[in-house]
Image 1 (cartoon, rainbow, N blue to C red):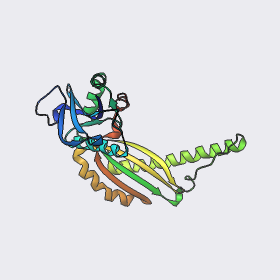
Image 2 (cartoon, helix red, strand yellow; image 1 turned 120 degrees about the vertical axis):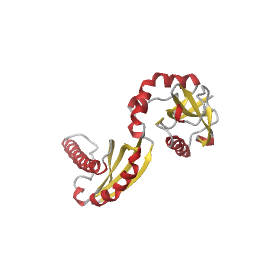
Image 3 (cartoon, one colour; image 1 turned 90 degrees about the horizontal axis):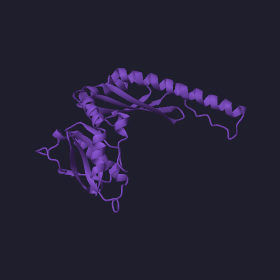
Image 4 (cartoon, helix red, strand yellow; image 1 turned 180 degrees about the vertical axis):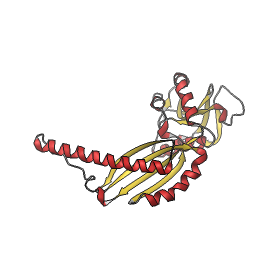
Length: 248
């Protein structure tokens, strides 16, 4: 039987009662395809899993939400290191080996993220002054002077957008004062762009962070600001932990 993996957490934080060496059922939690969810202990850690039959089970669009829901439920009571959607270990040995080979990285990550939460900001900028930077330059189908000219124009606009995005992200950082941040930027219309910002904060300061929204909305003119969270720290895991997977 294969195992579908949701996240890794600290064994002691789960309601197992005793430190068992065998998987145990987590009450009132349903995973992908409505399957029961179990904790698979491995030393100080536990991998939250469901049994998975490759021959009959299928991951669908709703499975993404089922995957995220299990992680969020675990996050209520413990530090979690989320596995990416669709992570499947074909055997118990593969699951145990994944934990053993990454035990040090897991330990460091759990210690660093303990007591931390992720907040999410979507900042849509609609400002007439940005129109010169927003339009995309279409590259000609053939090479030559025209192609090189358009390529330079496109690179110049990309740099201008990134400069404006960096200036805004610095302003947002000062307003919300997170521990860490991750920012992405993309064009959303002829005169607008979207900044997708993840902030790592102390879980005890969530209310204070949320209270800064009103002040930020007033100061960030020509912007639409949407805030959500707290979430598990999806954006703040080291790359070496992010890539851990079974034979998915």
